[in-house]
Image (cartoon, helix red, strand yellow):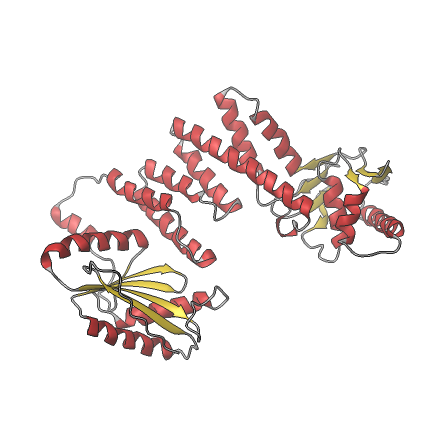
Length: 411
């Protein structure tokens, strides 16, 4: 939420980061690391402040299960200090917090605007709106009102976790509704932007497919491929996983939609050629390209009878277990890539399958040559003085029997 000007309104941001702003000055949140109870008190009282907060819930959150002899005295002390801080922040001299029948309320003498409350109001209208145009605008408003998880990393209390789940469901519902309406209108510009927003505020939830679909439908082939590559890299770095099958499917379908302007044969061949100078090492490619090469190879080998092997290289620890995701796994994965690329031939194909794993297609080789290659990779990797090792699984691409595994641990 943007910080507002001097309009005597208390602005409360709960999505992504928590902050409270008065006349352009932040009075709580973000940098309030030493104000845990004060911030927790404001989060409860200012969130949909008309309902009030039951005393038992307030004590449960503020005291976090601590066994206090006099909770009443402790509560009065917290409220006193809170009022003192609010007055020091140049807020109007009001009571701020009142109590009635065991329920605490934020004063109604001060106008409060909370992003979560605004999202609730918009979402209620979504449920009753019948006009498609108005419904689309309402759904988009809900989506863009949501700028991150409710209370972000501060959502540790049960009440905050429940609210975070509720707002997440509202956001996802409106995203799906808005995407469908934009798809019907073929409004791919807004659909692309909405997908980017969804992936940013609700990461690793597959909203990238919305952007990918919009790019593909708009015929933006180069942008779509770059977006796919960036997404694959992000998923690897954050979770060590592949993006969804839906995203890969969209990339494949993009190829069938591409049309080029008229060109000569030589011009087309230049476009197909690799950029840059001729370099040593294997051909490194993303998963869809690797998958396509593999499937084409299987067809070709039915007749040619050439010897091609598929090798899986996995980083393992001193006990032979796959290396767990930690601060050094990404660095080790990059070093594994360097070791492989320095060891294979230019005709071999290399793909990063996930964190700590690489696939290699080895052309015109033998099982003995595979063992020699493993030694070369190990020599390159061990020269980095890592305590980790590499486990290899190797199989002939044309082998029709149950997969044979050749495992070698190097410590």
